[in-house]
Amino acid sequence: MVTAHRTTFEEFMALPDDGNRHELVRGEIVHMPPPKGEHGRIELALGGAIDRYLIARAHDLGWHENDGRNERDRLVGWPAVGEVGVRLPLPDDHDQLRGLDVAYFTPEQVARLGDTLVTEYAPEMPALAAEIISPSESAEYVDEKVTDYLAGGARLIWLVYPRTRTVTVISPNGVGRRIGADGVLEGEDVLPGFALPIASLFA
Image (cartoon, rainbow, N blue to C red):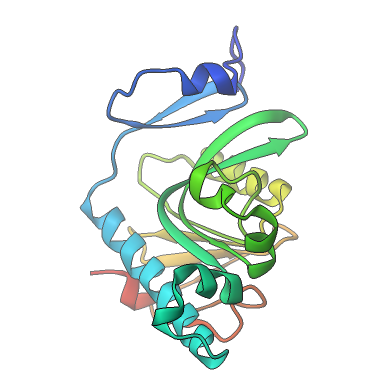
């Protein structure tokens, strides 16, 4: 992306709210209209599955609901959905700001980042980043996203394609493999033991 004027993070944050979502990528403001209903349903299904998995893991470690969410996050990590803001300090883009559909930060990240995860944009990539790919997103744009997420330190990326009912899993070396609707999505070393039938993500 090439622009005559590279918008800074400070300029981006000063913009008025126009009701749309925006990202800041290499000085360019990327406008993203609100997603349609299916997008939100898939986010909820995927994020809910991760949350249930983490609750079970926390219980195995002796956590109880009365201990509170902060204690759970400390034990098993911090999940979030709904355009989770991440500010990536990349070598060629120090001010990049992305919104992730689903994110998971490990307990180590929770300990390191603390309240920043709640009060600010996360200053580093989550271990797991998941995106529900809209028909309007070009392959080039998706590839750029994946490249930036990996450069930022993501250990696992899930690209969910509602049209084909598939999920492409990207490993840290950039190699992807596609899982069909009859397959199972696994958490690998980021969410060990996590398994979700792909079909359960789609109506």
